[in-house]
Each structure stands twice: as C-alpha cells, then as structure tokens.
Length: 275
Image 1 (cartoon, rainbow, N blue to C red):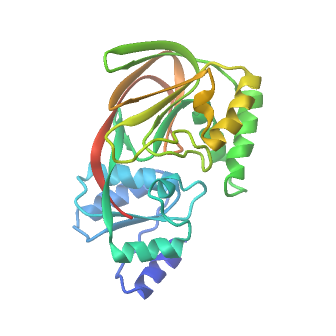
Image 2 (image 1 turned 120 degrees about the horizontal axis):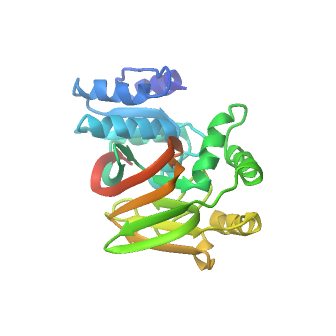
C-alpha cells in the first residue's frame, strides 16, 4: 500500500521519499532516522500498530515536524481519534493541506502510546487478533474475542494508585484511554478527549463469562458506564501493580506479556498531528 500512497501524494504535488518497513520495530527505527534528516513532515501509512511505532520513533527522536497518518489498517483507531476519513485518498489530501493540531501522548515505563493502553482481557484479545492474518476489518477482533472468552478467561488482581488514592480489585480489564475507541469498534471511553491532558481510565471488575457477554454489547455502544461492575476516573498519572504477570497492549500492539509494575502518565499536547 505504501507505494500507492506515495504515488498519490506525488500526484497531489507533494514530493515524498518512500521507506518500506521490513518487520516489527522497523517503522520506529525509520522514523527516528528520517527525523535526523530534518524533513518537512513524517507520514506513516498503515494501521494502529504502524502508528504506534511511528509515534514512538517521533517521540524518541524529539519530534519537531508534523506527523501525518494514512489509515490503511484494520481498526484505525488513531484515525478515528482525529475524526479523519477512512478513505486513504482523503487522508492524503489532508496531509497536503497540512492543517495541524497538538494532541496528548501517553507514556508507560519506557514506551509511548497514542490512543490507549489495555491490561487484561482486551490485551489478550489484541494478542489473538495479531495472529489472524487471513481476515481484515472489525471481524478480526470478533473472532479473537470469542477465542479468548472460551479458552483464556482470567481475573487478575491489581493495585491502582492515582491522585493519592489506592484501588485494589480483581479485573476483567483495565484501559487507559486517550481516544474514545479501541479494537476498531469498542467505544471504551465515550467522553475521552485527545487534548485535555487527562486519561479516561476504565476498570471492569472481575466478571465471569456471562458477565463479559453482557458487557460487550454495552461497550460497542459506549453504554457500559451504567454497568455496576464498571467504574471510570480521570487522571494524568497512575501506577498499576500486580503479583500476577499481566498481558499489556498499547494501541493494539502487545508490549508486555508479563508486566508486574506500570508507571503511566499523560504528556499534554506533545504530538503535532496533521488533521
């Protein structure tokens, strides 16, 4: 898809240098290297995993130029966060126009994330979804979700520290949201804003399979805050501790399979994006 995007940008009058990724970690490395050459803009074409690597490369290189995204992935949650058209050609037009805004970035331990971070059930779903290469779109997440629900259901206990408060609970999932949507269609944080300097943290306390099956349609509509097992709070900084190794995803990419301690904070309006 990269060559087609590059060709179209050139047709629109924007000179581009196309760099194709060769595997995990390569997008981050290429973005860091490209920024050392002081380009006018850095553009990534792909899904949320590509955006995740691109944002990490941009942040670790110190940024300095607008960051553009052409959404051609499965969920494209970051593009939804920017209210961008799902049409990649329209995304190219936006890049040529170069209207920008500054949005928040999350930091967790030694990496960054753009849209959200998930612990527990949704991280397990992200892990399974990444294994499905024969299907595209939101159906990937549906299949992954069903498999995890049937085979790998768990309720780890965690301690969450924020703003001088401590919450100890078993969880089905814990999400730290910058954007509203994750997994392509799950409206995890319907009130989240990408530039308010705060995370919307959603905690679903430990549930059985029947409870999860009741929760899922609520999350698809963004109506789960009325569920008695769900609580939400806003914060700029939190820590999560567990005695049980936890799977963690950031922007849909599995970052840890056995995390025990996470320190997470908002970096307000740190990323300049083309919108």
